[in-house]
Length: 473
Ligand SMILES: Cc1cc2nc3c(=O)[nH]c(=O)nc-3n(C[C@H](O)[C@H](O)[C@H](O)COP(=O)(O)OP(=O)(O)OC[C@H]3O[C@@H](n4cnc5c(N)ncnc54)[C@H](O)[C@@H]3O)c2cc1C
Image 1 (spheres, helix red, strand yellow):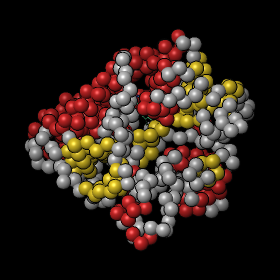
Image 2: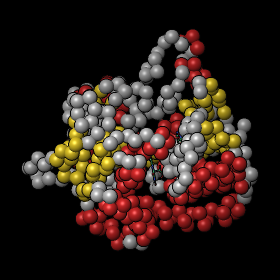
Image 3: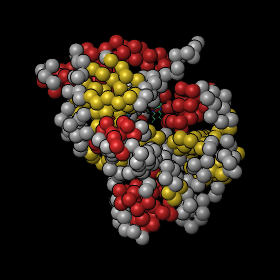
Image 4: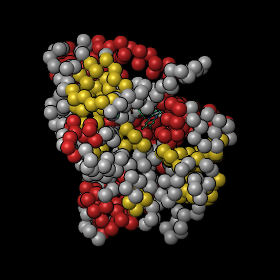
């Protein structure tokens, strides 16, 4: 069995692999994607010749090449289960395997935070990250006339990628305003290169005639069979005035109000969680070596909080040093020496990362948008009204109690969508009593798998194969 199993081949996992290789650790890297790189270094299929690859693509390629020489890579392979003894279940094309590495690094990244508004389930409405993945890994143009709505630099990145893919980007609807950002500008000025990077995304959009509206947000999406129009409103209006809406004809709406950390495996491994105020989510707590409270389980990158790719890379390196120290392959003094320059870089990077949610907060007004008939759990077709009634009529105070009353969170996505949007929505709309910090209890399997794979992890006996479907609790 390997010294270290790394789950996730994004920036955090790749940096950890390269450092682990330098330290002589026997390392296996698993990623459910068929290519390494994660979100930041997402690679197009090899068959696509690219005459002018971007700097980021080239850097990613170099890191991947180094990492694949340093470890065994298992791509297209999902970790669908883990337990408190960190026994790990892998599923590759329906074939199941259990591994028991000496240590595990969870570098599972983040995913787009969903927002429920009228029309959000219409074809043509998607998360900003999905639009990016369609362009970068499928070479699919996700629409012809696009509105990109949300908050933060990622909006501009995606708008630019849409533009380069030949989509007519009509407007970028940014919730933040220059005024709301003003108190944080003096601190931001200490990072001129990062600010220049942000401006570098916005300028080509303005030059291409893309309108950028600040202080506005999505209100609803409409259309018969698919998206035809997008309604936008000011984030704030007068105390008694209903917000004035504008209608934009579009067939693509990309929504990006931030990310949510993928914490299911950390929860199942028994890691202690801590409340992250910026993310409004519980994330695994970790020490100076990225070690969690569960013995031999480490975490790095956006699985434990948002900071961007450079932060994820530093954390990955620190985790690899931490694992070598934990296994007694290097002395404590040696580990401290190696870690010091990484930590000092990380401190600076984290200071900038902590400014971003203050410069570009997701507006609390998003919780005003869901109507009684708006679907909040797409897998189980649960409406907002039903989820709300679970709190106001049935007295649910936690997300698990809403789940048992309504079946939300029991479907294919295992609550990744409704679990990301319901806590703040219910806390704001249901009045007192509902705990916004409550989340779903994570359950194996964390990915949809065949029933035979469930048997391997002990959820059903082999004789039960004709029994519960994949959406059974
Ligand atoms: C949709 C999306 C798009 C983004 N695009 C950008 C961008 O363009 N620019 C930017 O600066 N930042 C972007 N970010 C932010 C970005 O996530 C990071 O800064 C960076 O990629 C984080 O690195 P990471 O290694 O922590 O996670 P990731 O890069 O997300 O890598 C995590 C990896 O873990 C794998 N994984 C997760 N769970 C499992 C499992 N159970 N089994 C097997 N494998 C698993 C995933 O497939 C993924 O490859 C994006 C984030 C998201 C969610």
